[in-house]
Length: 249
Image 1 (cartoon, rainbow, N blue to C red):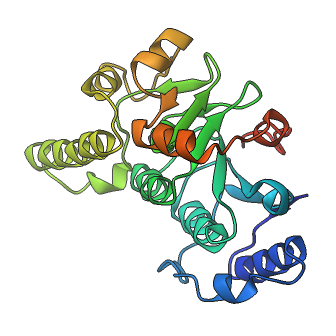
Image 2: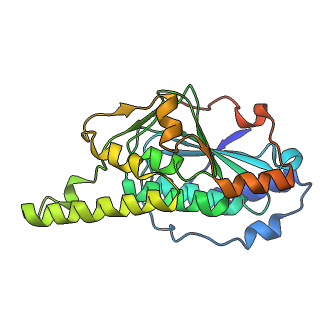
């Protein structure tokens, strides 16, 4: 069952559904799981959904991020991943977002990589602007052709409105370097960031299969491949690809 996660109520929902999936076991571990510093974050324009139906049989939890990526969505997604981590061997994060806040997307991405989560964009979804920053973080990345769109980093105009031209340029360059460093940490080739910079922020380049693979947005982390081979941990296709629960906002 796909469930929406409400701010401040997420842990109660996860405790209940995981306890049911494990016959009442495991709630103590989740209750003691580390929490993010997000209790006072603003309400989100995006939505985070979670499906725990496959934890008991396959050790897999499925999360969707739908709609705008903002600080609220980042807090919700991070809290859900941390809450599920001890009971789910694998987290599958499905993306359906037109983008949003670059910093929030990178926060989600850092947690994705820390938790060893998969990221995916299916044929019924789209992942553009800041969203591919999350896609890049997955230890396994699955993306449908022409459903992932990139452009140069876009930051809120309020960050630059009161600055001189020189100061605004310096600040933009500093923020862009943060994005480049983040992509490098995720193992992405420099070509991805370079191609982003060549696309105006008011346009989108939708990537074909060849580009997705060449730019690293389709593929696996080598260390993860070796771990899967050693553990023989296969996930059935019907678990990986349940129907997308909602369209992008």
